[in-house]
Length: 573
Image 1: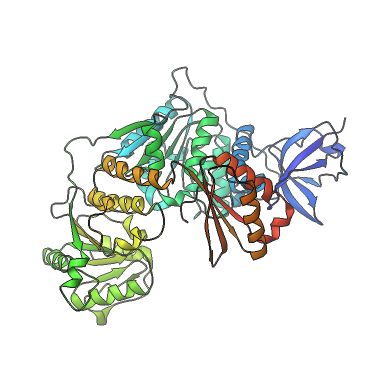
Image 2: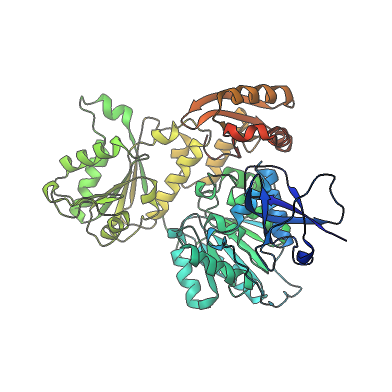
């Protein structure tokens, strides 16, 4: 009896399509393999997601070619990508496309022979238990992770460890390579296609026992997964900006549920959503205390810009307190980092001002370094990595930069961090602004833990803001922030869906449809136009219902040319 394959393609089309199997392909086309199919006058690579013996009541074309001799997606990964498709309102084919690294997209048959890993004993790691590891004051999170990984490997399982970006996992990668050598695999966007392909094969075969990677590594093809770790789970880099706009933390939660494995969420300052779940008992909260003597937070000083600028006619970017502290650092031979929240003219203005105030200081900014002593001797054009290297080698006294610089903080000589304007973060027009501010200050403070002269100076027009006053006290910050969210009915008490649409006529039509079909309690927030088109934000408690309306409407082909982009649980608005 002839079989028929259900195929999805990696294009913005919601539905799956059935294709007939040529007789010679019977037994070779199974769920999880890629095939080449005729589609709208061209040939596309699609993914087989099901088979049927019953012929659909439509005219069918045949599959043109089989790409893989064995499945590249197993049943669980098909379920996970189906969940991504449903949750983030995107076609299943695009979800599968995102789960498959670019370097593996080769139209050449490859046979996979997974290595048989030993079965875990009865006393395996507790499955389906999510641990929120609240890293505080430098308490050994790396050691905590290593012990969890060793336990998983001891039971014959594999471990998946996610970090927000490559620079964050170098320390643990070195430790793991020292202990497990060739059993380590890495997966991130900086790898060349052939490197990604090689690592993907090692994961798929079981040769790699520990996988370390960034956001997309959440889809790593591990054959015997036993543990997932998401470090710095509150970092916005875990949110994909392209379709599907998934959040790696949420995908990790669903993968841990499907695979029935434990998940550790690590954070210096947890996301409000995660801490909220821990407070409700859905997650187990673990506050990791540092071994040995507790390191003290640096001194936090608030420079009130209202008072500062009312007392003098000329406005400087640096307050009197910050200028005096920089001078003291220079006299002691110590380093300063000045944080500015956004690039642009403000960065150059700050550099010019610092150069005038401290003409003998060696200045640098992220992306450009000024290695020599005076402005006349500055060397421009040095790359970011070289700038950071100069700073770490003590060749830069004052480093100016944006968010990227913060992950590089550290070193024996660094003793001062100045936040030039906290208000540019607090006033960004996002309900998460206070959370972003607190996380930033926590990151900065932790970089100066235990420093004898460590100090953070925060310049602000809002010195009494709770995100500033509660640095070092996450529970108190959480209590104030969660009450703010409750009053304004924002997440975690509701959910948001952000829709961007380029075509104005389609935008008006979609607004009317959403208004007509919305459930009670669902708000359609005021829309705004931007460079990417018109924006619609939907807010409500019934996320499943909101997604159902959007998917039901946007599945129509008439929206394909309207440039619609859906972002469920947006991090930025």
